[in-house]
Structures are given as structure tokens and as C-alpha cells.
Amino acid sequence: MINPKALDVKTLPWLPLEEKAAFPKKPAIYFAIDSQGTVQYIGRSVNVRHRWGSHHKYDVLSEIGNVKIAYLFVDTVELLPEIEAALIEWFDPPLNNSLTNASKKQPIPSLKINFPSRELKDKFKATCALNSRNMNEVIIEFVMEYIEQQEENSSKKGKGTA
Image (cartoon, rainbow, N blue to C red):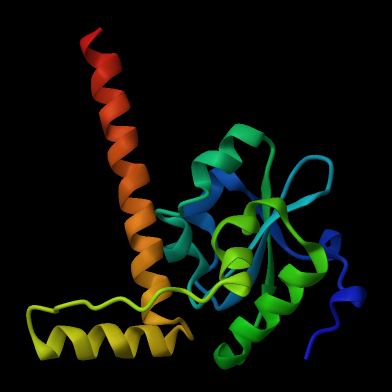
């Protein structure tokens, strides 16, 4: 296991946020670090490039400016959630306060989803398990991202007609 106290994020490999298409396709814990060296956000993924293709924090981090994404590669995918939780607790990044810290204080509500087929439900469940994610968390995260995207689209349309 990783000792968060001993981790120096300045020594990790990194890329500028804007180069998200070049992010590695490896399992990793990733750190969004601002120009002052402050860890703004920590996340995990089995494929960092895919995760950042449409990350819900991209716009917020872009507004901060000069953000780099550093990587701590993890060979054992099953350890990603545990390592992520320990690092979030240690670094206490401000942008993790929304869903991650809220879920520590309150249980994530149980959702009743009616999938159109058993096959789709099984695939979704397997994908969540493979990524060590809770199905409810993934659905809530998806809904939040969808709402943000719709709000963005609405504001773009409003600007285009003015």
C-alpha cells in the first residue's frame, strides 16, 4: 500500500490538462495540480485517457488555468478505490468535496433503475465491478455530468442567438 505522507506529487509524471488526448491509457490515481502546486482534485481510472475524454471537472480545472495532471500508476486495479480514498483523505483536495466527501458523510441513495434488458444490466454491473465502482455512484455521476452538459449546451445556444 502507498503511504500518502511519503508521496511527493511533484516527482510524478504529468501532462498539462489541455493535452488530455495524450494522457496514458493505464490504470492510475491522477492528481489535478494548479500552478501553485496545490492538489485541486484526485481521481482514479483504469484508463486515464478515456476518463478525461469527458471528465466532469475539466471545465472547472480549465478555469483555474495552468493545471497539470500527474499520475500515480497502479498495477493492481482492485486497489484503486482504497488508494484513492487514502490520498483524498490526506491531501483533502477542494474539488473532491462535492461527491466524494459528501458520500463519506451520507450514504449514497439506493436507486431503482429499470434497465431495458437483463443483458444491459449485467454488462453495466460487470463494468462497474471491473472499475471498482458502485453502480449508484456511477449513475449519479453520469446524471450530474449530463445535467452540466445540458446546461452548457443551453448557455451556448443562448449566446448564439443574442
